[in-house]
Amino acid sequence: MKTYRFLLLSTIILAATTSCQDFLDRPPYDSISDTEYWQTEDHIRSYSYGFYPTFFNGYGTSGLIGGSSFGNGDTFNDDIAWNVQGEFTPIRIPDSDSGWDFSVIRKANYMIEKIQEVPGLSEEALNHWMGIGRFFRGIQYANLVFAYGDVPWYDKRLETSDRAEMFKDRDPRSLVVKNIMEDFNFALKNVRTSDGELTINRYVVGAMVSRLMLREGTFLKYHNIDANLAKECLELSRDASLVVMEGNFSVSDDYNALFSSDDLMSNTEVIFYRKYLSGILMHCVLTYNNAEAQTGANRALMEAYLTDEGLPVHLDANWNPKTATEFFSNRDPRLNATFREKFYIRGEDCTPFNYSTSGYSMRKFMDDSQSSSNDQKFRGANNETDCPLLRLGEVLLNYAEARYELGELTQIDLDNSINLLRSRKGMTIPKLEMVGESPAVNGTVYDDPRRDPDVPSLLWEIRRERRVELCFEGLRYNDLKRWKKLDYMCNETNPDIRYGAYIRYSDYPKANRTEVAIDGGAEEGFILCNRGTARKAPTDKNYIKPVPKDQIQLYKDNGYTLSQTKEWANEE
Image (cartoon, rainbow, N blue to C red):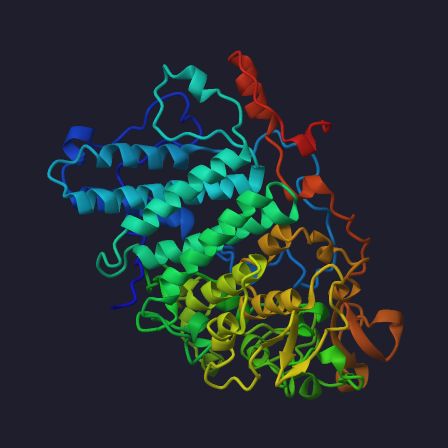
């Protein structure tokens, strides 16, 4: 059994696509007619490629922004030391919002409809492609539900004459989630375990379902929406995780290589990746780890990494590192694989890299042995490193968390998930153990003194493992939302997010003291990155988006009513 991934190049352009904003007004148009196009399985496969950029963007596609949710694109969370804390968005109901868009749903329904008209398909092929179409529909609906809660459910392509259906009000979140689960279960059962290299298969489905159902299940639980449905979602996440864990994947020996390699084809941990090639498809995530100044990580994140003895740093009464060498010594090796082992201070000579506003310099997406290279693929928007979209490491963490939330977690589960990550080559950290309901290492129970008291100690460690293993991979903000913990992003309740590295000005005589200010103005201390006003504490409306005004008005203009999100019902 091989590991299957997908290759998405800019040369793959789908001719048959649906319209975007005006999907309610007219059916999709094609460059060729339906009867000409939907004739073979290859036609279905070609059409399916049009969904890949929507769900698997990876490191983006162009420019120094690129739309990536990795690296510098994963900054709205409690891991970055922002110099200013803005309010949670949206602040008010927006006039429009591109997120409230059902064109991808219509496109998936169109695909599902047309698959059934392709002549000569075997039952196996029909079910496989129906599974792919329902997989796409399930992903999009899972994202819509996570963003807006109640949304209208459409399981067929509507015509312009179906006005009552087109303008129906939002369906309950529970109904939509149950339909999503039906789509995902069908896909898990029917999508092929192999459909050739570089294409979606059952393991890709399993990894994505593992992620999305954990997200939905914990959201339903911690926001007190539907405990029974939450349990069903978590069970599906657990089962989907097992589909992947029983496949031919294993934890990679080299953590940094997962994110800094030009070719992930042979990486045993990678389930699905996006391929980049010079002159065809490139990105800029590596550049931000190489030549560009960084908005750095904060103290809270950096001190979340355990010691190499598997213990929280604050259990040590003598924890008070004054230098980078002291800070990075004897720590979880993933800290050193994610950040450089010195402080990069504005004003100092940071050659061959650039400064970080917090002093902590991210290297996760860069092979530092290439730092002296003059090859332009390490500069600008010329980066060619492949992006690991779905990997076993995340699935193992999803599994451990789902099992905990279901009240099923055992030591065997930890050994088959988190402790596999801790057994990576070069890892010296002891395995995580359970003693009753408490975490332990080497038989000794411990409790992090910085633990959120609302989070049980063992769950705290499972969440910590997720934070460090998946650091800057685009998942942290959604994790805070689903746990109902956006308050971690507020410096009044989590003051360590304001600070960077502990430095002594005498060690950095060229430091720009205006930009590299130490809290209190002393000659040594933590870099004060956030000097602005505190972000307001989150309210329920910060966890769910409102329906934009233009959609409310569109319904009204056509004689129908679209309900506003209840958390926003009293807002203008």
